[in-house]
Length: 172
Image (tube, rainbow, N blue to C red; front, side, top):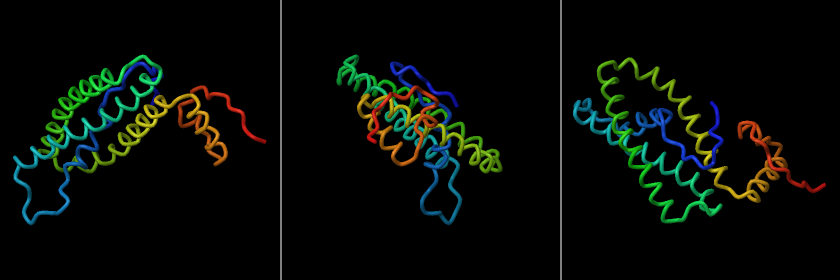
């Protein structure tokens, strides 16, 4: 899993968000009879839209915050950027939700392998969100987090994908 190192490029929601679509489509209360096909496909498609939209909003918002702080982007431009990327991601999420629901409907035995593969996708999505969060921080905030992590015995450089850590003066 490589890290996108360009802080001026907004990351796009990809297939790493697909496992969440299946989880979001699950019903909380188990019905006494199986879901009708139409309802299953509709719920999975709507779940795909929502999951991809929220994930893309987080990615775009966190990454573009750094651009706003650097003065490259204004707040209204940031809002337009987020809305545009969320709209595109929701269209993709609709297609993914529909495709996944149809695949599981035709081949129900694929639910278990897709769930196992989902752990990898969720891990990548979490790391992407952390990187977007990190890139949105100011250098002083990054230094404070490095210092706090060092005090706690955690090496942030491994989580940051080997990126160059800013040097900080640690108290003795």
